[in-house]
Length: 84
Image (cartoon, rainbow, N blue to C red):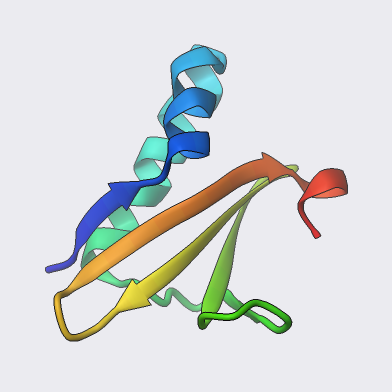
């Protein structure tokens, strides 16, 4: 099982978002603990580290996976128009 760590931007985002969106995102993060690369995850090209993204409606979660320490680092949660 993987550990989820949040960068500063995702912490601020989750603190200020609506309750329904908060519940949807936390459910997706719980799923990432079990399976860090679900079938709907996409590999994002152009970042220094191997970055993946998961869709939550119109929102995107970008994250890195460290397999040696079993940690998933969430680096960005943003609306789809502003994420890429």
